[in-house]
Length: 483
Ligand SMILES: [Zn+2]
Image (cartoon, rainbow, N blue to C red; front, side, top):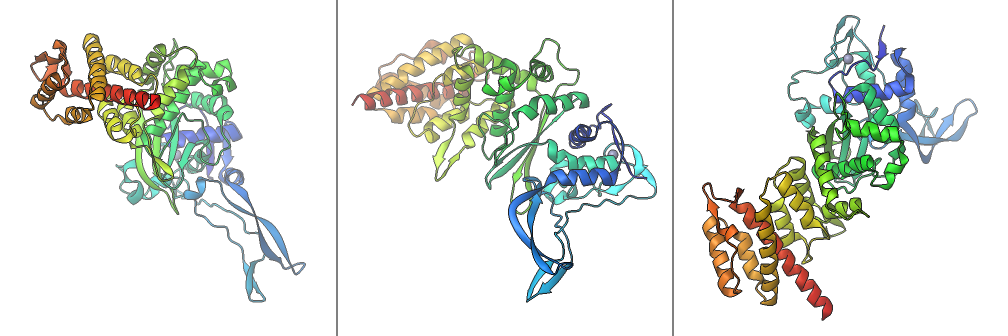
């Protein structure tokens, strides 16, 4: 017999199955259940009234009656295409159902017991379908999700219904017609269950476009993930309004899972994100795993320490939110995504901040505390020499202010465009003559490997051009306000 076995004892190693198992556990508890009963229950939760009415012909009373139309819950409807069936009859040239159409999902299992491809259990098997494992079933569309899979996936009753239940455990954010992001977590199943129940249930939003609070979001994967993480981190520190919706135990659990508590969880949290284009169907564009959440949390804490204690979270969010440009009716957020991607991977965000300032910021300086936040990043992550940083900051400020006064914006563009160390020094030479400024020795102290005090020359150039342009724009904005 096809039985669904719900136990939280161990993970299957597949985050989609695990998230589904947790949802099943929350509805049914632990135990063994008939597949049909569970399918029926899940169907009820996944199909909702749309608010519209349809008509059907009632043969018994021979009259046309109304019924509430239903549909798969958004965004499940992008993945489940099963349309309801009912017999039809023609009355006065128009066809009617003879009863309200019923939504159904059916599973049939092999008689022979074999090994499930997902969990390894020996059980009767069924082929994975679009409606329970959308990312696996269409290898053309979702190839990078399961790269090793050459044939169709054959799964046990538990994995089959867990795949469907997983939709109800998602966190998601839709960005109009551009993108749908799906966030899934992994770890110990009992912890994952508590995370869903104690942390994400109280936070759940009933908004149309998303069901979880985010500091910001857009069509791209990294910016949206970073927007989610900033809010998750704020919960541990009680830095946002949402944090007050959680119990102290829930905050402690989150701290442990993020590796932010004194005693971190045995299995720290992993975050999986799928991003794709919604439409008639869903086209996956990227899939990524984030595993260094504890290190990111430490970085977040270091950012907060240098911000004013009154509203550190708001200031930090506005620093990262600013990297967008109004275009038409929406925003181009490509800079924010690239900067977020660099930070999430502990890479170098400076080239994208520079590009934003010269191309995207629409002649406005960076918002309050931006440079201070990235100075923390340069010291903590990119190991930039503190003395060098101080020198670049000071000289960049002088350079930008003088360039503004002398109407020499072109000089800053030449600095920005310097392609090699020679060009960089030639620009500095120009600066010396045209603005009568002395170049600090620290910036000229080149070591082997074209390093300046341990930093690549290009990073020094980029940082200098950021400070200079920011000072230029700040001064320009101030003088235009005075005028
Ligand atoms: Zn299985």
